[in-house]
Image 1: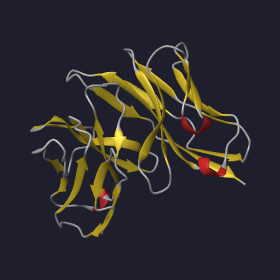
Image 2 (image 1 turned 60 degrees about the horizontal axis):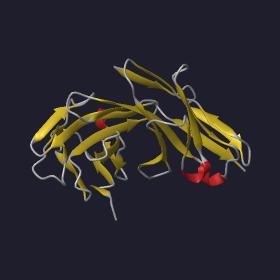
Image 3 (image 1 turned 30 degrees about the horizontal axis):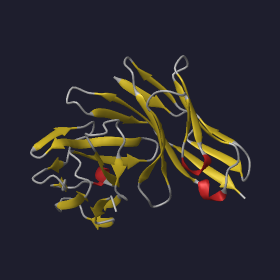
Image 4 (image 1 turned 60 degrees about the vertical axis):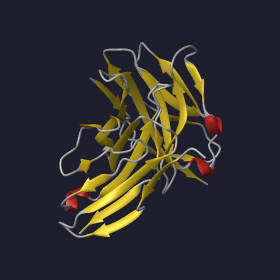
Amino acid sequence: EAQVTQNPRYLITVTGKKLTVTCSQNMNHEYMSWYRQDPGLGLRQIYYSMNVEVTDKGDVPEGYKVSRKEKRNFPLILESPSPNQTSLYFCASMGRTVNTGELFFGEGSRLTVL
Amino acid sequence: AQSVTQLDSQVPVFEEAPVELRCNYSSSVSVYLFWYVQYPNQGLQLLLKYLSGSTLVKGINGFEAEFNKSQTSFHLRKPSVHISDTAEYFCAVSRRDSGGYQKVTFGTGTKLQVIP
């Protein structure tokens, strides 16, 4: 089954404690992206990657890091989380062969930073 | 640059009544248009998309949307809603960017609440 898998689904942490949210897709997609979803703001792009070792900032990259060492994985790293990073995070992927902009989403990771 | 406006943040509607969720966009170039649905505690899934051709697009679960180029709108409609349609709906547009991929921009979402 084609899917995007995120872990953990739920996480509560404290300010300053580094954490990583993993994302993996099994569709051989070149493009992967991270979004955060906040009430009234919709989805905002954090970082994206067009291929292995190629990453770029989205609209709200401050406080986040990413890496793309393998095609299937695109982890999101919060080096020193702060309460304003409490949010619902989504990983998504997009294929190049049928390049319409259709995104495939993971089920989301709800992060609370105390 | 492109932007998407969903004018209604919440839409309550009685079961079996029709519903329209509004979406307007702005872009200086041709775009593709999408509606995604997010059920509670789930990720987003594609409801329907407009790429070209007929301006009336049919999607899953009985939803349809009409592309209106002159009004730059892509409103979502369903003639008779069901309780299971309670969800948040996102309109999105995409355009080709310099990297060869599609740059996707989302609206702020509309929560559809179906009342029994």
